[in-house]
Image (cartoon, rainbow, N blue to C red; front, side, top):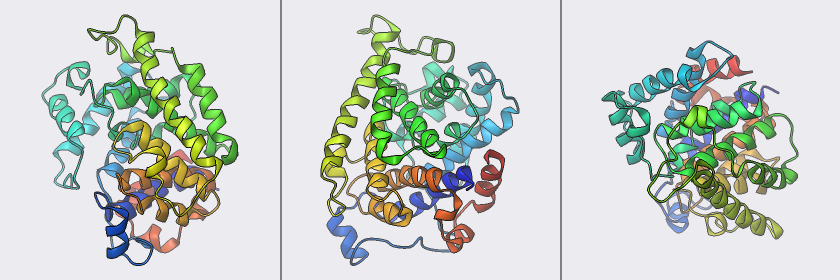
Length: 330
């Protein structure tokens, strides 16, 4: 099945397809790509955005760590260096998020990551890149801590951490063959279980804010926002409508918990039709490339490489890097 490769390529395909439609209304997308939005990735290579670039950065940082025993002390330098390399790259010209740019600039100055991060940002840059964490053979506690830690280097808001953890959990569940229909319920149980768990060995003093008294109080705010968006996802799935813009149900995806929920909704509308899921994700009024990127990660993790057309595999930008990491993870 090659679930890891399917996830790696799926997120890149979604990113490339959604790159054409980000910032556009559904009506404008249909006008430019009649009648139902973009159906194929364009170009050779088909270009991706910062979503895939930063996912590759996370994956290559994890590969460079070369140890099965992962800690914040071991991973901070590889992640920092990978983010700085991306920030300095001439290919970093795909409308990258301002949070990532500002945080990476401070990381490049050598600031401690707790000072470099954008403490109040919960943008989707936190979890659009988390897929590599999901595909490592980690225990659940380490996976959760690492998913949050990679987000925390740039996005310090509690919801950015929780949404990254929840996104990683969903991908892991699907890659292991989890039933898509029951996934929202399993994710709710996970969120409730993690609501007051603060990974202090990884996150240190990140929780300290003028209006926050304990680490548990800090992280619970993030999980509560994730639980709220899971409520919206459940409501949308009561009478699922493939024709409505998913953003109307679960948000436009500019923030982490909405990017997670809207991407998951797109996947759950078409759990056995990966290309239809990507096309639905690209035909959205919100942060279409991030929504479609995560949709592709979910679909590819669940269905493996067989989900994707060989022609797309051959044409996607960074094909060799995606293939190498997919092979390593598989």
